Amino acid sequence: MEPRHPLPPFTFETASQKVQMAENAWNTKNPEKVSLAYTPDTEWRNRDLFLHGRDEVVHFLNQKWSKELDYKLKKELWAFTGNKIAVRFEYEWHDAQGNWFRSYGNENWEFDDLGYMKKRFASINDVPIQEHQRKL
Image (cartoon, rainbow, N blue to C red; front, side, top):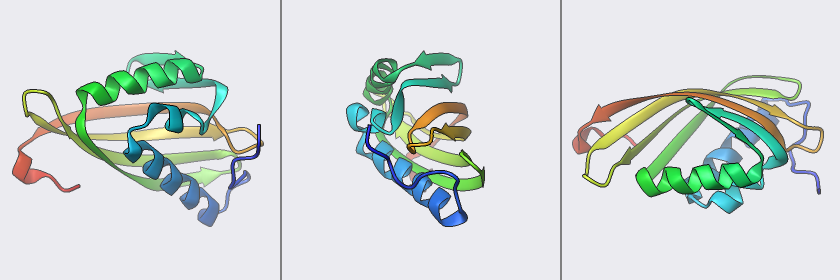
């Protein structure tokens, strides 16, 4: 695999770049594109789900974005050290019935030497909102 810059160890600038790259990729809602930022054997915890490998990530993201309509995400760098980054995020979406939600969470990321994310652990809470309360 080719290096996926920026590479660890991270500085404030390079950690911020990784966060912005992740936000941009997730906002495409393209599971295959998003999955390429992760190692082939990536490990995830997303809420109560445990995923292993890119194939499971693609399957998960396809299901996610078929339910979370008009998804829009904003990520923010929280902390970093060496090959690890912590992020806070919020995203808004609605279900098929038109009910809107804002989801808040934190992610812990660990990268390999080539700059691919090998671990992603996410804790997420959903808050019902009215459409006029959207911020994103």
